[in-house]
Image 1 (cartoon, helix red, strand yellow):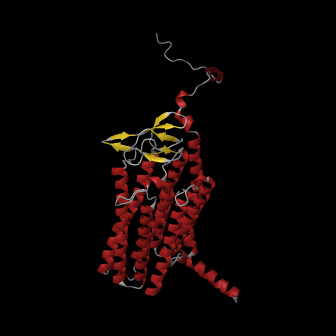
Image 2 (spheres, one colour):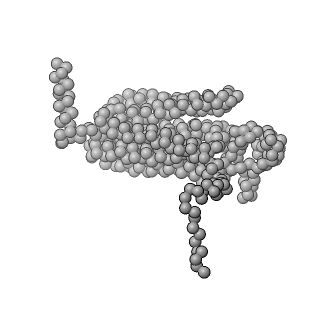
Image 3 (tube, rainbow over the protein chains, first blue to last red):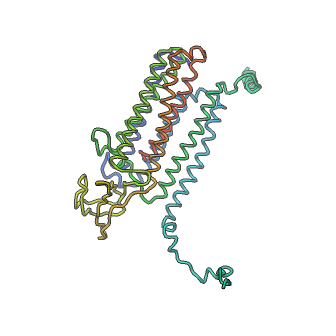
Length: 140
Length: 278
């Protein structure tokens, strides 16, 4: 895409101002949610969910802007853009599955830590199948 | 009339796929750069999702605005300020890269060289910031890939001794507050404190995975920045030598390294989000 020098400069300036402003907004939201800007605000845990969501959405907007404007994906053939964008949809599954998994590890942390000291009901174990044969009994 | 027009565009699209020209209207090199970046995006996404899973599996996690609250020249207690500056450096270097590509499209050789040089400086500035951050974490705060001295209190309580820095004997703290275990003469010196329920305890280390995840993921990103700086420098020399003028393809190589450089900035958006903001 050819454009004049002045056009190019104004386009870059606009892009940088936008990305910079979004970054500043993200940092302010992060500090707000953790109670740095208004002390005491961090007590409301519901706020943390909102600030988290806001930061994720702003980051996705930054990513969209970088890919579409700076990397020129907006000006490519639609089919080509789709071959790049569609595979990333797999990450939605990855994100949900692995965060879910991590959460479960957290819930079962105590069980994993104290597995060895877990008590086993001896009678129940024997009733569940053949009694365990002792090895080396016929050797002598 | 409009139907006729539709017919012709459809026919045109079919012709695109009947051979002889690129249906995606782009060069092989640029297309392959895109697919490389797609695969690289999956690598980074895998690492960041692993960070998320391990963070979710731990009852406590180091609070970013406590861990990353120092800056050069002795600044302390400035949460996230230094990494915000690092982000700006990378964003601005993305802007100078766009300028280099624009000047390439206008066949302005000196302009391309100048803006590529500015981008190289941006990349080097970012790497310098990262070197300072790593040095601070390793040499001053003694974080390693196996030890994480950033812990979190799980109960309210009061300190029984001071650390000679910020904590004094008798200081009170609340559940969820962070602390850094100091090292004195090569030995860890966890402070003892008394919880609300009257039990005397010592500061415990934070989740072990934090150090390895931090150094690996920011290190992998830093390695991408470093390779990008090397590529930018080589391509800058090629531009200066007039190589791409002879190729007569509108400085396509500058566009390709531009894609890579913007991708490095793109990854930083997400590293910044999960490591520092959330």
